[in-house]
Amino acid sequence: MSTDTVRLTQKIAAPEAEAYRAFTRSLVVREWMSDGASIDARPAGHLFVSWHSGYCAMGEFTALQPDRRVAFTWLGRGEPGATQVDVDLAPWGDGVEVTLAHGGFGAGDAWQEARLASERGWIAGMENLKSVLETGEDLRYVRRPLLGVHLDELDAGIAARLGVPVSEGVRLSGVIPGLGAEQAGLQRDDVIVAFAGRPAVDYAGLIAALTSHRAGDRVEVAFYRGSERHTTEMVLSRRHIPAVPPTPPGLAEAVRGANAEARAELASVLADVSDVQAAHRPAPGEWNALEVLAHLVSHERELQTWITDLLCDDERWPDRFENTEVVPARIAAIARAYPRLAEMVDALHRSQEETAGMVATLPPEFVAHRGTYWRLGRTLLEDAQPSSHVREHAAQIRAAVASA
Image (cartoon, rainbow, N blue to C red; front, side, top):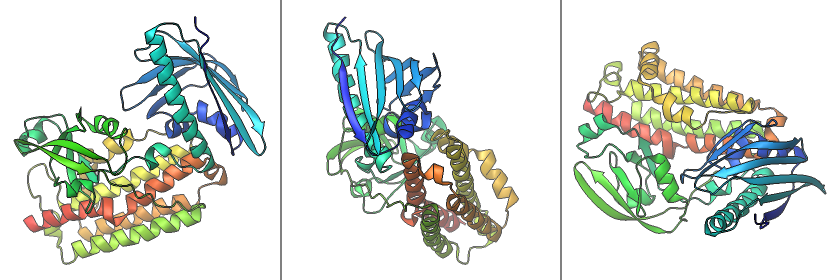
């Protein structure tokens, strides 16, 4: 066996406990290293990490010393055999020095390829670990370019209704004004099937293709509009990331301010709309205005459940938002509970205030988890911007009302 070990050291201005947590908690591993993670940090406990690229690795913990040492085996997809990762944590000034050694690689081309991939991955990962623990910012997200699209479901039934000859792809529910997708001519109900020469059969495939690019890159996008396949060139936009206030009360006020702008947007759309118009369904299978608002109420409730998960140091994100909030039975139940437009709007406003109220009372120990706090704040502020989620659905409400 070769002794060719990948060895890296990173000095981080953060407590040793935070660095230890970064290797032993599923939600934190997802914040700096992988896209998916399932971690059972105990002797012989399992470790599973995955990326949108399709790569994944599994192993088991071989040593755990709180705030001092973590060790685990590592068997990546397509690799010749298992290897060993050892992480040592040592005091460094007011922070921690993290030393990572990944060894046990054998001889031969396949092993050499695995070692080089490991080195690339850990170099990027250790840089991001420092950023997440010191500032909260996930460099993978900060540096990722923006398409400027909103996404919706696609299955065989929806494809047939749209006249699209494929049931796998990324369906757009809208585009953000001024960003790359709109400038490239994409529009609602287009279905992206390839991005930069790579298949985009679903959201994960689209993100995997996007991760190797930067803002300003020109890429070719293939999509269906009805039965016709088109290709266009898109310039990837820069991502605007809102500054996250450092305290929970400040973050809550920022969320309230963004929500107030969104409410003004909705109020202009709903002015003079009757209950009959709000309940009018524009087409079979499409939401009426009341159900669009029910979706927004559901979204706020899922935000509150997600915050609860984070406070419990666990989460089911992003599956919760991709699946739960668009369940037809749930939307229908909320619409039945608030059958009048004024009642539904009031329910939305109250739900938004409940979310802001939860944020305002986040405990100091949660804020100390900088990566988790930053991710929560960034998500809430981006989600509340009237230029994104609410504006997308405001256009949907306007179209539903117009059809009445």
